[in-house]
Every structure is written in structure tokens, then in C-alpha cells.
Amino acid sequence: MKAHTYHLWTIGCQMNEADAWRAAAMLEAAGYRPAGHARDAEFLLLGTCVVRQQAEDKILSRLKYVEELKRAEPSRTVALMGCFVGFRAGAEDGLRARFPYVDLFVPPSATGQLASWLAARAGGPAENAGACGGEPPPLPDSLAGGRTVRAHLPVVLGCSHACAYCIIPYRRGPERSRPAAEVLAEARALADRGVRELVLLGQIIDRYGLDLGPGAMLLPELLRNAAAIPGVRRVRFLTSHPNWITDDLLEAVADTPGLMPYFEIPVQAGSDAVLAAMRRGYTAARYEELVARIRARIPGAGISTDLIVGFPGETEAQFEESLALMRRVDPDMIRVAKYSPRPQTLSARTMPDDVPPEEKERRRVAIETQLRAMLEAKHAPRLGGTEEILVERIEPGGRRHGRTPDSIPVFVDGSDARPGDLIRTKTVWAGPFSFIAVPA
Ligand code: SAH
Image (cartoon, rainbow, N blue to C red):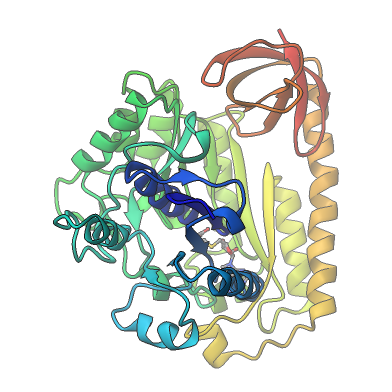
């Protein structure tokens, strides 16, 4: 074990990743350096996700390993952060009893607690003392892991929608937008540190500002301002709920250079009965209309969606409505999840998890198989075409990696571009999930 080293292990969504990344940046600001492996690190930082049971299982097995490391070297510090901890005061007490070897429990987006701990350790006053749940994470002084080109910036914390299946509101607390001035100051500071692509995050990002009172800046204006920051080449935003995408937002995406034509809009199901049971607040037809409206206003826009298979009571016919809706909507990506009952949620409390695991798996595979075929067909015409790529990193062996405006990953051979450069490429292989290209 080396003094003043840390190791970050994190799973889950971009929001979790952003929280964990900030915590790592704070440790770096306090003089810690990354250790290549957990067993060498003095400070073990774990970012956690509980959106599905599978994620929770991963945390529990990781914690077993961490317990061994702590036992071997009790002077280590173990910090557990994110949705496994949750935002409610007192949530820690139960966790402390279960995991006595964990030193520090950090609720989602509440890196202020880590700041207090670091300040106490350094013997100084705690700058962010007591910060929790609602307070924005502090701005990192240095960036962890060399991920400087693309940064995730949480702008709406928590969620108040309460979809029947979703644990996030119980762990991240109610929805609260961060003030625009604070978000934009942080965006400028990130750009000064070399960030070229900003990804603004929220569980329902398209509700940004609606909780800040009359006259508050809303998402379209926030995005325009972010895209105008010197040094910022690209801005993205996720995740959108279908009910809150406005024409103003589409206008902003259509007419703002640097604001990428890319939307993440989870649909979750193709059957209106299932959508109603999920408490999503729209019908399949409305989702289709929305996608048509986006494509009419922004030709070539990338649309990514999430889909849950095996929600309680989902019949074979209802599942087939999901398959059919996906064929009609023809999205550019689908992230499929098998339904997993989560504590406290409406569905876990009131609806039996009655689709057998092997049937959920069959439905997942059916969606994935259809998606692959759809994307192969959709991407074929882009072979030989040109794309604009923001280079994010250099792979071992020299390949450049970046994304198209509509967020397809591209690997570029024979380029000497640096991370952060915008380059034009010619596509030499157009696969379903990524492209291979050469400089154009
Ligand atoms: N507000 C975000 C939610 C993030 S959770 C959004 O709308 O995308 C990411 C995805 O996980 C959800 O879109 C959903 O498809 C999936 N998910 C959430 N809870 C789930 C559960 N209990 N079982 C299976 N998948 C779930």
C-alpha cells in the first residue's frame, strides 16, 4: 500500500460516474494520486448503483473484496458513495452496522461530505461541511483519469416522477435544478481545463429550470449558453422524458452549432397498458409522434431509447407491441433491461414479478437481435461517407476514438489528431454499433 494513493471503482449511470469522478478529483486536489490497483491504494472509493438487482449484487461482491483489503491493512480508508447509500438522513446507520469496515458513506451527488472528511483529516476548517443531498458537488481542481475531452455535468439532481419500477427517486431524492449561473461557471471552468464536450445530465433533463421559479432559465437557453463557451466544441444532454421535450428545445438543437443532434428518450414499453402500469404518462402513439416531430425538424438526429422487458404482467402480445414499436420508430440505439423489482417502488410493492427469468432473457435477446439487424441496415448507406468526429482518446496502438454528432462510436486509423481535435473522416466499415474510418 502506498501513502496518499486512491483507487476508484464505479458502476452505473453517467450521473453516478460524474459523482465518482468529482470525488476522485477532490482526492487528487488533496494530494492523492491514482493507484493502478485497489490493493495498492490507501483510499478506496466505490461508486455504486442499485437500479437493478444485478448492480447491487456486483457491489456486494466488490465489498467482500474491499473487506479483505481493509482487514489486511486497517489504516486504509474505504468510502462508499452513490445510490447504494441513498440520500435520506439516517440511511447510513443501517449500512454502518452491515458494513463496519466502511469509513465514509457519501450520498449521491453529495461530495461535500468527502470535502468535510478531507478537511478534518488535514486539520483545517471544513469548507463544505455538512453538505448533503441537495447541494451541488464542488468543482474539481484536477481531473481524474485523464478524461479531459468529455465531461459529465449534473444539472438536475434527483427525480420526482416516480415511475412504478424505478428506485432512483428513493435514492437520489426529489428533483432539484442547479442554478444556471452555477452550471455555466462550472462549464467554463471545465472548458478552461481542456474539456471540449460537455454532457449535461439529469434524470429528466428536459425539465431543467421548471423548479426554479418563474423566469428561470430553461434547458434550451442553458444549452445555447453552454455551447457558446469558448473552447467548448460539443454539448449533449440526457436523459429526456417524452412529455417534456418542447419545440424550443428542438429549435435550439436545430440552430445551435455545437449542440449535437442526439436525444436519449427512454420509451420503456410499446404497450399502452404496460406504459400506464409503469406510470410513464404517455402512450406509444405519442412517443411515435414525438420521434416524427424530432426527425422532421432535425433530419439525421440520433435517437436512443431504453426499454424494459418482463415488467409485471407483460404478456407475449404486449411484448410484441414493444418489438413492433421499435420497428416503427427505428431508433439509433436501444438499451434493453430485464425488469428487476426494487425495494420501495410501486411495482415491487404491488405487482408480482411474474415473467419468468428465462422468458425475460428471451425477450431481451429478441429486442437485441432485431436492433442489430435494424442498425446494420440503417448504417450501411453511411459506408464511404464522411463524418465529423471529436477525438476523445488515443487507443493503445494509435487508433483515435471519437463519436459522430449522432453519437456513433468511431475508430480512426492513420490519424495523428490529438484528443480534443475535431476531424473529418471517411467511413471504411459501418457496423451496427461502431464505425471504422480514416482521415477524409
Ligand atoms: N431517468 C432515467 C432513469 C435512469 S435508469 C431515464 O429515464 O433513463 C436507466 C434505465 O434503467 C431506465 O431508463 C430503465 O430502462 C432502466 N430501469 C430502471 N429501473 C429498472 C428496473 N427496476 N428494472 C429494470 N430496468 C430498470
